[in-house]
Length: 161
Ligand SMILES: Cc1cc2nc3c(=O)[nH]c(=O)nc-3n(C[C@H](O)[C@H](O)[C@H](O)COP(=O)(O)O)c2cc1C
Image (cartoon, rainbow, N blue to C red):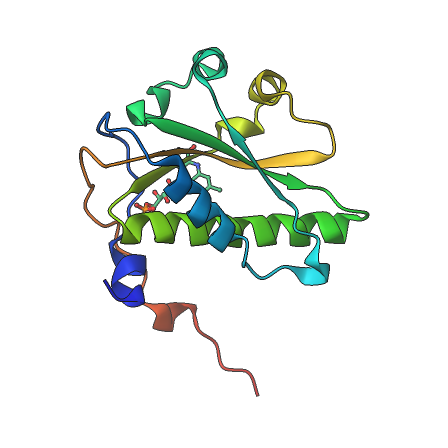
């Protein structure tokens, strides 16, 4: 798949097959994802591989679509509100890199915002100076949803003098 096809065909996957994931492959995608743009090279991302006990405690409504792997992706705050925002932007790029690398190999991802809740943060033992940007289910898709159409980009573009 060329990169345009990878980007436009990726979907938020809600139902996964039980097939195991290759850990080395996952790590290679995480390593490559860390080439995300990152102001001041703070490398704010941290990745938690969520094991079965912790996952059960998270009590997600669909158990992340029964994904074989669940990752929590954290962003370290930094020394100011600006740096915190920029770090979260960098971690979002990191996540997108990871999702696209996975998708290019036929592996789907489900992005859940469950990690925003205090209960989930406590369950994951997230320190106070970290944001949980997303909790990702990762695995081979059982179903691939139809595309959610996007607004034609011309309606989002303004030309300034
Ligand atoms: C910050 C963020 C949080 C999200 N949280 C959730 C979530 O809690 N549950 C969910 O079903 N999808 C969540 N999503 C995925 C979006 O719902 C999904 O990307 C959107 O519906 C578009 O679908 P697509 O990714 O298949 O194009 C989240 C996406 C982002 C960027």
